[in-house]
Length: 495
Image 1 (tube, rainbow, N blue to C red):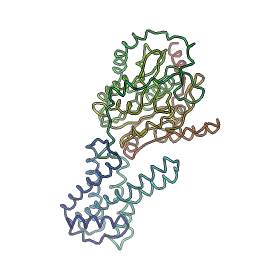
Image 2 (cartoon, rainbow, N blue to C red):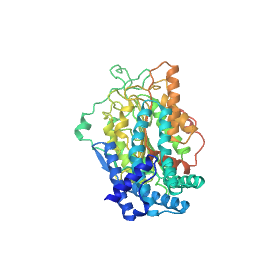
Image 3 (tube, rainbow, N blue to C red):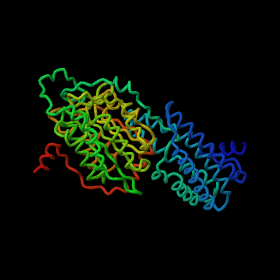
């Protein structure tokens, strides 16, 4: 026990940029293995603190810790060889102890500070602290290399750079996982039955869930509601049958676009544009499913309902490689201040979607690991905390207490839909960069219109961003896809 504690203390000294005091010769492979167990305990404790009380165990988190220990061992071997002396196991033990201490006293607290700064729009300060967090390990390696070879500055710097490339830079390409993730809670039938039907009418500017009390003069829908509901299983099955299986050895992108409100074409426009955009520009042809509520497409598209969404996601999980491929869900509709997404096709009595309902729909078998979830609705920030985890990027078009803009009978696309889909993802293939561009554009438009800022939100992690970056590097991006409203696209196809 004493050698382990002594090595951990030496690791802490190195993290504090001081030379170790112990003798590396005294540290053998047994201490290194014991430190792996310590590393697992520390990682488990950090994950438990971050995830809260309701959590699921993710075995991939063990792989992450073991891979980090292996890379640390390789970095230590390189440092010893370049220094020309030293004991490899001793150097590896101290370096692994430094890895543990860096995670505990540098990366963990700084990550929380960076997240808090980002949430309050202190972007540049957050970027600066994130850079400090990433580069601190390089300073640790410099101190450690100097301890091994104190008289050769050039060799010290070269060794530290090489060791950094092996033990740290590698994680820019390798996705990392936490040992614990927030659990997906099964919604009870009572909860689903008690979900109130959100009202539906045409809003003036914000896309908040509107009130139907003044819609008595609206034309009756020209369809048989009962037949439509009976047709849903066949329509959904037909749409799912057109999806192609994933490509072995490649991370494929699967997309589900969900247009919840039939009262305005703006939501249909966005869902069908997302289908064209991801199929043509992001190599997702054959991997895109559209669920939409619109009187013009009831015979050709499955409805955007919670049941269809749940069944679709479960079917897609069986077609894709749930551990390797990426799922992107784009939901566009009205949102209410109590965080319900409007699901409406009058006169059908459709259930509204709350954060827990969406979480439940994502509880597929097998479980899909890598996800990008985009909620474009008023007050959509209320969905972020329920959906976020280490392998999921969550994007919301508005803060939890703010409306977003651009819907209505006179609109073809919402502010956020235009900024994120039409402009952002046609300028870059990075989803994170597209969000940053969209946030800036939306802020500018709202300032010009003298509207209260919607403040689009994002919850992300190093793991999902590393996964998306790896996918982006293999992507052969297509040309930008011009936006055309769905009705015009439909008429062009008929001609």
